[in-house]
Image (cartoon, rainbow over all chains, first blue to last red; front, side, top):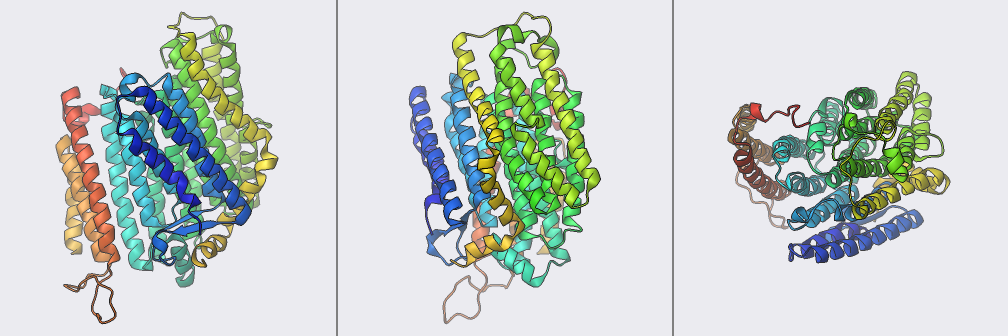
Amino acid sequence: MINLLLFPVLIPFLTAMILMFFPKRVSAQRTVTVIGMIASVISSAILLYTVMRDGVQAVTLGSWPAPFGITMVSDPLSAGLVLTSNLITLAIVFYSFRSIGAGREKHFYYPAMMFMLTGVNGAFTTGDIFNLFVFFEVLLMASYVLIVLGGEKRQLRESIKYILVNIVSSAFFVTTVAMLYSVTGTLNMADIAAKVSEIGQSGILTVIAVMLILVFGLKGAIFPLYFWLPSSYAAPPVPVLALFGALLTKVGVYAIMRTVTLLFPHDPGFTHEMLMILSILTVVAGCIGALAYFDLKQIVIYNIIIAVGVILFGVSQMNMAGLEGAVFYLIHDMFIKAGLFMLIGVIIAITGTSNLREMGGLLKTYPALAWTWLVAAFGLAGIPPLSGFFGKLLITQGAFEAGNLWGGIIILASSLIVLLSVIRIFIHAFWGEPKPVKGTSKQIYRGLFVPAALITALTVFYGVGTEWLRPVMFDAAEILHQPSIYIDAVLKE
Amino acid sequence: MSVIIGFLFMAAVYLILSRSLIRVVIGTGLLSHGAHLLILTMGGFSGSAPPVLEDSVTDFVDPLPQALILTAIVISFGVTAVFLVMAYRAYQELETDNMTLLKGNDEHD
């Protein structure tokens, strides 16, 4: 019973509240945001350390006994994800200084970012399914602000659709929670898991499981439900895009992981088979999109969809290797997507366009940017020492162990297409004859490039330092594989 | 009760699929009403019994669904307000409330 795991939720929340008192003073906004973020990063690092040392941590608000109060739970998976989100948000805060513009900074850009982080961290930490809904709403509400902030025509047009899709999926979520409550009589995730394994997963529970996958799939962009994502994400400016691409879909993916491993693991022939087929289709659809566009933003946005498919494919294998690979790949993907979006932001700032056909020859003028992009691109595709490799290796191993030979092969083949799609950016943007570009001042270039390069360096470390990170991933996967550890930690306080 | 919920969902789907933006917003409002009534029904609907937990009271309903509905109502209230404001801004900026004219097109992409 410790309160430590509430800090990554509360610190951004309090920071946002403080920030709302003086919206017009930009430098004060920046300072307070950075202080709050650093505090949040430190507390989540301590949290991860504590969780690794002492096992799963749980706290029930108001000291109610476990299944009745709202429980917050930190296992290595959620603590790792919380730390990752905090690090990425910190980098994007620095990135925003030079790119978001004073207009947005004066109109609650930083508070919205902090509220979104509150929602994301809360959704990763909570152990109560209705509370998960509430945190989803917190992060969605902040994301509505971020996506429409600035009020350009295009943003307004896309944000209407974004909000509509999310309201419908929230209504589905409430409906599903109501049904789940009427069947199991509890909202605590550990308690639901225990009750489901007691009474057996009957037909209605499988229906609820599918509905949950539908709800989270709509947020996490799996195959038939990803249609809203590419155009909505392309509308807001690049820092917001990086934040959304790195964090928002991953919350949906995390929720699906919990659903199929903790709550409803008893009917793999139906739910997991369905998830596997959907994830393969997601990968294929993402590959088609990533190759079809000549727009920087769209190419990387479709790569989000591919990654979601790869992670969920790993989850649907339900063996140690697949789950560990999925956890590995999930955190890798959050870092690398943030890095890639920040780098395309630099490219767009230099060239003044996101159309690949109108750029070229940046290698001569901006060599550091070019090589950083190449490293990030190789990391994304999973060239061995870099970060994407180990996750994909484990996922494929899991697929072969589970006998899903073709699925594993498709995942491997998708890496080639991912590589092709990002190398196309390298070829078109960096090789060839230099074209006249809008250019940008040295100061802005440095302000944008340094955070992007730092995140890319982190992904390199993540790949090279696999050996040190392995225990965290292993513990996370073990808890996913054996939900009884999680259930005991919550209920046997 | 379930008929009412079904009817609300039906009306919501009809409104959300219509072209006018304001009808879509009202549709989402109805959708959340349907979901809230569903929570109430799912928690066991037992007439006028009060949601209290005391030793002497034997006839009570589960208080939890009502707490959930309260939370969900507040959230949907906020979301609807945001959506309405945004719909109005979109109407001002884009000079249309017709959803078919709000499709993405190539000149912007």
